[in-house]
Image (cartoon, rainbow, N blue to C red; front, top):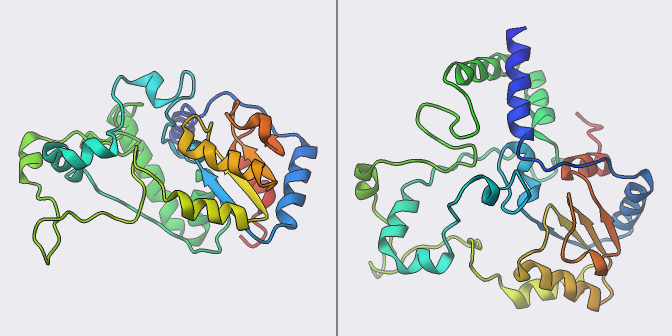
Length: 266
């Protein structure tokens, strides 16, 4: 009973980041399934809403988004690149844990993923229960998930000593230029021509978990509409591209994706 209670508490915590929502209509699911089935090339744009069910809040959702919960804002990319202090502060907190089941793995939500792992390795289930119970004993809440003071969204509170001890990686050839991974940071610019080309050559564009509030994402949806590329959107609440969308589903991403890609082989 204690284990089940801990799991329920964990699920309530994770769901607290998901905005109020309803179920998608059967007809809408069928139309989306038909659209994707006849499309050989699909461009997919995902926003913060793709991961809210994993306990990572989005930015703008009313009542549950990061902006509604806290006063701090993400560091803009240009601020990051022009301030050595900011670079050292954020670089020192980078601790990435990644689990990639494989490129062919279907999209699944957290509970389903944990259930699959438990079946593959029964010991995993005991570890999960032990972890959850430990967190509950440590006053498990929305702000911190363990005694090391790590927030659910992976932000960490670091001591000044740790910040000062961190060295930013530099180019081993010139000794000055900083390394940058081939990803787009918050406030950075995406390679517009490359994305436009991908949209133009696609058979459909699918947007998951984004309100498209920021123009950098909305412009690709607008260009898809201009080029007559079918545009489907899955998001809780309105988006900036609703008036130009071919199809809009107001629902959780996991609900729609698990319907499109059922776990028949699990």
